[in-house]
Every structure is written in C-alpha cells, then in structure tokens.
Length: 195
Image 1 (spheres, helix red, strand yellow):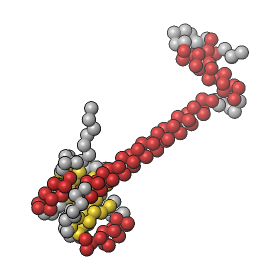
Image 2 (image 1 turned 180 degrees about the vertical axis):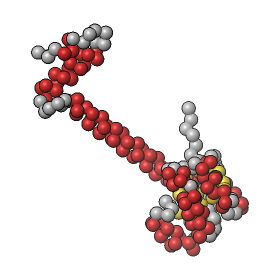
Image 3 (image 1 turned 135 degrees about the horizontal axis):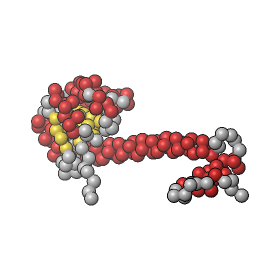
Image 4 (image 1 turned 45 degrees about the vertical axis):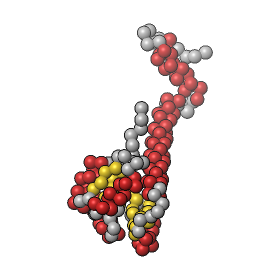
C-alpha cells in the first residue's frame, strides 16, 4: 500500500508564474493544485485541504490579502492543519522575514529573480511537511496522554472503592476479576473474601 501524496495548494496571480512554480514542484509533489482566481481561494482550499499552502503572488500585499481573506472567510482553513510557504522577490526578504517571525506565514523562499538552485523550493516544501507531520504526532501523543490520564483516574476509583484501605481494594478487585472470568456461574464465589 502506498502513502497518499501530500497535497500542495499554490495560490498565484499569474499563469506564467504558476507554471514556473509547478514545474519546479510537480516531479516531487504530483498532488499540486493551482488556484489563480483570488475570489476562488477559499473554495479551492476547502476542496483541496492542502498540507502545504504555497503563496506565489508577486506582490507581498497580494499574498497577505489572500491569506487574510482565506482565514477570515473559512473556518475550515483556520482549523485544518497545514503549513504556509511564501515565495518572495529578493527585495522583499526583510518584510517577509518580519511577517514569518510574526507568525503570518511559516516560512519563505526567495524565488524571484528565479533561483538557479532548482531544489530549494522542493526542499522547503519537504521541510514544511516534516514540521506538519511532527505537529500531528505531537497532537496524537497529547491525546493519548489525556486518554491514559482518564483511564488512570477510572482505575484509581476501582482500587479504592469506598475508602482508602489498599488491602480491601485488592480483595474487591479480585472478586470483580473472578466475576468477569466466570460469567456463566451465579458469581457467589466472587463475593467471598480472598484468603
């Protein structure tokens, strides 16, 4: 059984730029969806449910406007776990860094003028996917700890039913275990104290 390929949603305002970015990513990430229409960004996000949201509008303000609209108009976009990567122009790196530091985006890639390192963009997407997987594992582990704590509290109430006598609690547990192990009988033996 093969794993489902990660989903990448590319929000872009130019068909030529979208093709350039898609060409850099498609061999590594075949589940790439491109959205050129700003008005369709919310619908495209909710249909795709991406692991990585890649913003590639040339103007930094366009990228900010798209994400603001996405997160204010879509409860699904706010709740769905994903990472945001911003492609920027070389002269926008200071502003972009500040936006990432503030938490508006997870990371940025200096992409324009076009880089000669063809693997920089796919590598950044891979890093974002690793971060997302780590966050999901952490969330799952936290959920398991909560379940364990709940079960422990329930077990504690079995250990000390009606008091704090550990020996009596052990006897109660033994009786209950006998009752569970002998379901066909009348369980009279389960009520006898253990010697």
